[in-house]
Structure formats: C-alpha cells, structure tokens
Length: 95
Image 1 (cartoon, rainbow, N blue to C red):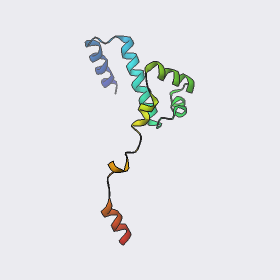
Image 2 (image 1 turned 90 degrees about the vertical axis):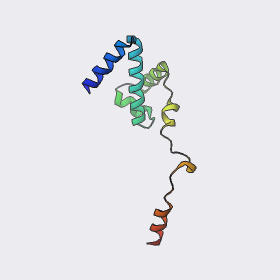
Image 3 (image 1 turned 120 degrees about the vertical axis):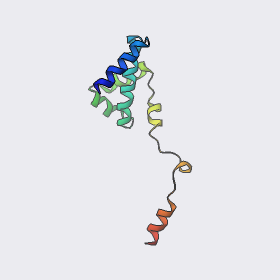
Image 4 (image 1 turned 180 degrees about the vertical axis):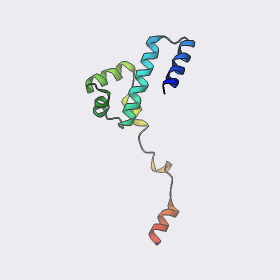
C-alpha cells in the first residue's frame, strides 16, 4: 500500500495538483469510504474515525460530500431490475 500511495503522490505532483486540492480530495474519498462501510451511518463512521458526529457532519459539508450520494449507492435496485431465479424457486417448491 505504501508503494501505491507513493505512486499516487508522484502522479499528483507531476500533474501540478496543489497541496490543498490533494488533501481535500484525500479527505473526501476517505470519509466516503468509511461512510459506505457503515452504510451511511454517521455515528458509527465518526466513532471509527475518532471524531464527534457533529465534526464529521461539518467536515462533510465543507468537502461537499452529500450523504444522499453515499446512501444512493447502497440501495437495492427496484424489483424490475433484480435478477429472477424462477427455476431455483420452482425447484425448491417441488422438492
């Protein structure tokens, strides 16, 4: 992982990304990942991050990280888009 981070930092530096922008994007992606891991639960995410929930909420607002955006990726697809396993269901009913 250290090599991947070093490679990323080298790429960012060579492409002229400013320090402030790099830190902001890192924070945004890191918080998003932790929130996804906790299914959008800010209390659990804040506990893992070692910060107060209000601080997490304020930081999310500063970074433009919308909780609805995080939760949207976690929802189940509508029934019309879910795979149907009718053969499996029929087999379990018959046997």
